[in-house]
Amino acid sequence: MTGLSLFASTLALTAALAVGPLRPAIEVRDWDDDGRVVQTMSLEDGGTFSLQFTHSMYGGTVTERFRVLEPDAGAFERSTVQTENGGAAEYYAPLGNFHREGAATWSVDVDPMRLPQLLVSAQRIGNPTIVSGNNRLALDSILPEGHVAELVPVYH
Image (tube, rainbow, N blue to C red; front, side):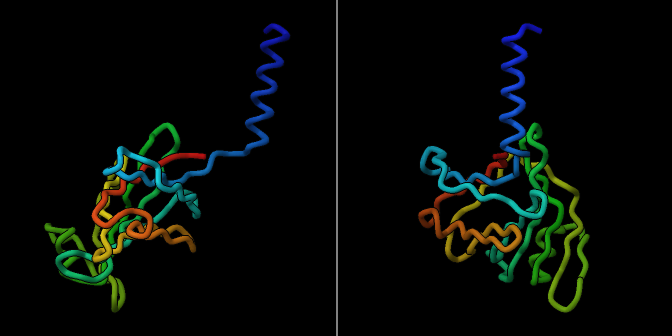
């Protein structure tokens, strides 16, 4: 290795160490505005988050839990679906693979699903909200009514 390339490698390593490890986040883009980035939300709890919304047919809050996979995967993985409404649970579990957890929660047994992005309509009636730790981001508060939010996993 020449002195110049060793120097460049040392500088790159020093810069990477100074910045620290990359942290998972969600980039919210406006699908109806040519994918314009509206906001980036850093994620707590090791890159996990929930998408919460009111079910359009049955009512009640639905919570879908996701995690951002490693940077080279470029995807989310959905792990669980829970709801306050038995009808909504049945909607997500046509084969009957759901059960009651406590007095107010139904859990749906879902296989993990990898998704490169999530598309969510930003409407006040459903109030779709991203939740990570104590942070909440209501999509209808940052996008015009009816626009589609494209949620993309990123690291920064």
